[in-house]
Image 1: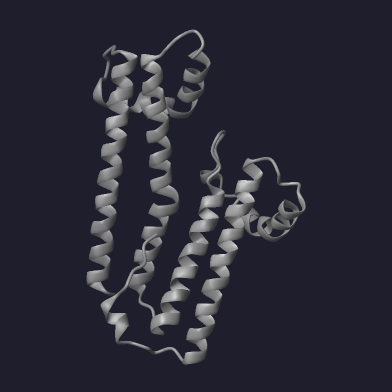
Image 2 (image 1 turned 90 degrees about the horizontal axis):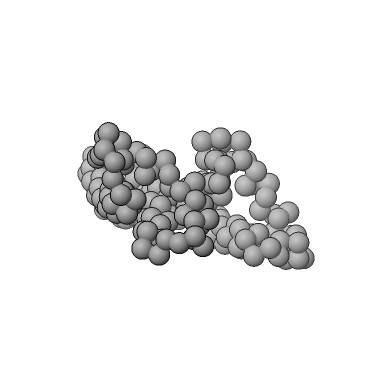
Length: 213
């Protein structure tokens, strides 16, 4: 998430020096805690979470991550976006603290813009790139399809099958098309949606900051 600087804040320092300093210190601590979360996730992926380092990271980080586990919308059979939601929340709070520590004040517009940017950076954008990468791999297998790659194709389709079916219904209703054409169309549609969403985000953030409420 990129750092927002609001012109109206540059000339406004309503917070006292003590609270501004405290906010800056807390922002640094949250930045360090976010790093610990990333290390915890990395250790769990490489199967060394039971080492002493992994054990203490688990004790420090997991109580916070568990707060987000009940959010069913972020959990699916093969997906668990709750760690990203946890990191996104920390990022918003950290950014707000850093801005308050710098300028001594905040605005509703700035908070709204930070939330939008954080949701994009930690949830929406990574999900887009995840599907784009899977579709590129899936496209590769349309050229290299063989009896040895059927298992990989089935695994990929279990992840992106719903997206491909939606594209089929939307762009080719009631028509039979080749597997390769469907994958290419889905990839192009996903990239187009990504670019449109990114442009919409910039437009919304710019509008919110201009309103300045």
